[in-house]
Length: 393
Image 1 (cartoon, helix red, strand yellow):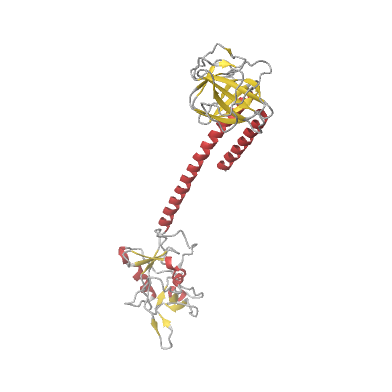
Image 2 (spheres, rainbow, N blue to C red):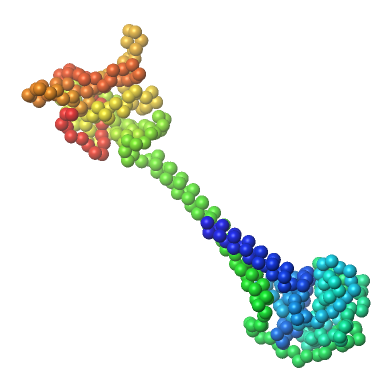
């Protein structure tokens, strides 16, 4: 949003500058000065044009505006109106050497009008041009010896240098560096536009660099978050779906398996060396110290069925066998959950059975199974942060 806003402002500034140039300037071109030149300032006194490339504008009241390519402050110098007979379609400017160390800056405009300003390298010969009424350019040398070059246009001569009308000297006043020179409203607007464009360009470059740094920072943060997410042991809940090849992680010296989808931690497999009645299975898990950890318990039926069907890509150790008809079967495992039977008095009568699961599970299994608690089956212990009550349910 911010960058788009400054781009819009920059476009507006460009249009404003174009409109001003079209309406206020009578013509423009460029020249290059290879030495510092002293001119008469439009506000009086003397002003120095440093070596640079300048865009020359012929403005009202017989003044010339020099806009430097490297510096930021334009120069408004005193000039005189001239006429010419050149057939040109675009403004043409040239700096022509004069008598002594004098230099003459001329800009010709289409239609026969023009401006000229007299300057010098030393500063002691700066003159204000005051041509005689109706004075124009009498000659147009074909190959002048210019001290500076421009982007095209004829060389010129006229009053003030080699002409019949000699320039009238003025008493020059040196302008102290830093002194403000009064400018017209139009020139102040042009200067403000130029400075604003420079500031907007610098600001846009800084914003582009800032944007690149922000994107790089976000990419680094995203990479770190991805790395951390792969190491998180306990997900926040059962609302995640983890791909099968990323779901399981061995922990506790490879003695237990973390299920990243549910956050449950399981023994590597059910007990294989012993079968338990339901009460014995509850006690066995409570006393387990697998992985050097306590807090193990018998899982609820809701937790136990999350292992169905037993994935072939998991790191679990579950003993499976193939029966006489080719079906793969495995152990039956107790859960903590017990179905309630109404109309009975004793605890054993109210909970005569407990839910169990037969592995490996599949489309045709009958899980979960309600089995008599006195029968003997295996136990598969689980560990979780929330723990669980040992009361059957």
